[in-house]
Image (tube, rainbow, N blue to C red; front, side, top):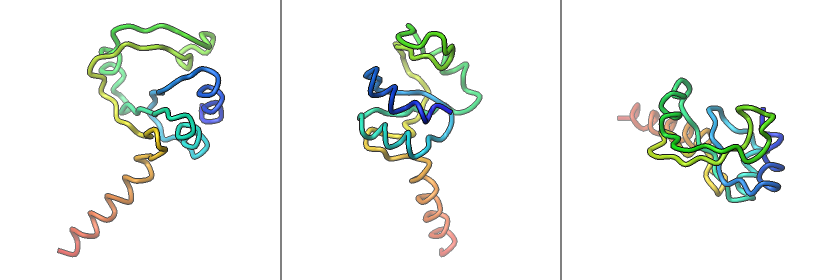
Length: 109
């Protein structure tokens, strides 16, 4: 739901990273690549573990959006995965291809 705002947020705020739990669409991936940002993904249901890694949090923009606001976090050992890197590589695109190839190769043995 935030994909349509990704470019504006990166362009206007200097944001360098985002955390979420869902796949990002191509419009968001393109903006992430353009601005050299990253998208970190937390496994659904891991909110407790993620929250324990946050040592300090400060709202820096859009406080009225609640959990969608922009925060600056100080974190330690946060259990997240780089889902879209600064070059626009998405594990949601590369992962299925990689595992398909591995499964096919395993069946051939």
